[in-house]
Image 1 (cartoon, rainbow over the protein chains, first blue to last red):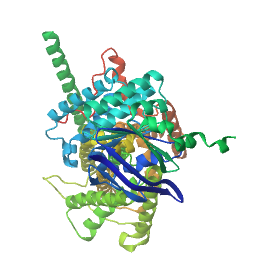
Image 2: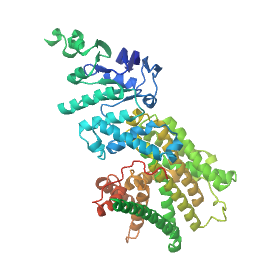
Image 3: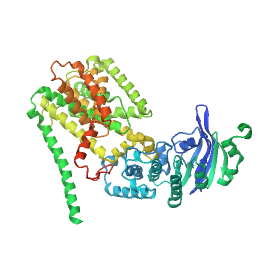
Length: 257
Length: 344
């Protein structure tokens, strides 16, 4: 069953068409890569699906529900979460506090409860326990009391993932350039982390990434965008041999000479 | 192991109690102020400090949730005008009108917030400033609000529980009780889940949104709770002064609030208290210098602001709160609970 369906998604900024009638379908439990040259509209697709932007046209369905144009917090609370390319964390808080911040939304409560916090004592130990679990899974446990803004880049990206995963038992996560700026070692460990997210937590993963080696190894299926349009879709092997994709990245012969 | 653990428990219990004891001692000292401060000059300065603390604390609460308003002075004004109109024109009970003043200020903040909070950061700030100018213009223009001369003969609070109001000392106690209540509420919010969420929103609103926080709801809540206290402070101010004019709610009040907030430190609940007390002490102390020209005052305030911004960008509170750490550097930081003890 498709967990995410995108139909005819279009986003215009002024006259510029950033995403042009995109159709996309994701099955539960798969890892799908979204690639394309700079400015192809990958991040815009993310931003529209996650509710950061409202689409100009088209529909988005998540778990069969129409989520087109919903607010970002609504979409997150029904189980579709994301990470950001740049704004990753609450840099002034410790690692543990960052994870707790995400976890806090797990239990719904009104403003009144939030202010006076009745029956929260046992909830709190419960949250602490889950925060520790998540940090251990993502290899952040040893740094739990460090200020997150002081962490090395690779850890910050992992923490960004931990925050996204901590909110409301997500069914699907969208990762915006999860291994960008990492060295080979960090990339390898992040990739195995993404596999574990899929295998152990059963979470569907959609990712945008420029590191082709990582995308090819990680993804079961890849969609290639160029100028907001889908130009190819298929397994990593098919994509590698696709003429249109090669042209999009390298240009045609006539352009090259 | 066991004796060590129970020993630790006793020590933490003592530390908690000593904190509580210090708080109670400070409260008692505050309540005794009129017995050893007989000069009405100093009493007035103290009263000014108390209602300014309420204003700055309300402003800081909104700011901690990422809502930078440049209109706290007019919410103060809304409270003052509400009380003045209800008490003088309709002869309502003072206490009821004061409550209404807070509610009016909060309600107008909620409406204004709902309309303007779709703007972010500095754009929201500027739009609230525009709102402030419009409101001031309304007060200055319509005879209903008494135009430039404002509203006169605002009576003292009605007698309540056998307590009579009208004397300077009675106003001092009223201001003290109001300010203490304000700070208790602020402290409670800071330690609650709501306070923690506000902090997250203030640090990174997009990230909070992406983990499911209804940012608009919480920002507006912080804004109107802050403005409620500004409104109550305004009600107090109206009676305390006996008359109000639009001039009492102009830009210079905003400047003072910003100055106190920044110097005190916006990251701490107690920042407003530090900011108001320290800056008032400086400005009052300056008047003792022989041949002191009051025109120099603003220059000194400006210089203090620059020095604080350069040396302690997180305000005086960061300096004061690091002092206990100098004495027990060896003991680890055990406090990493973000929202304190909410069960109590």
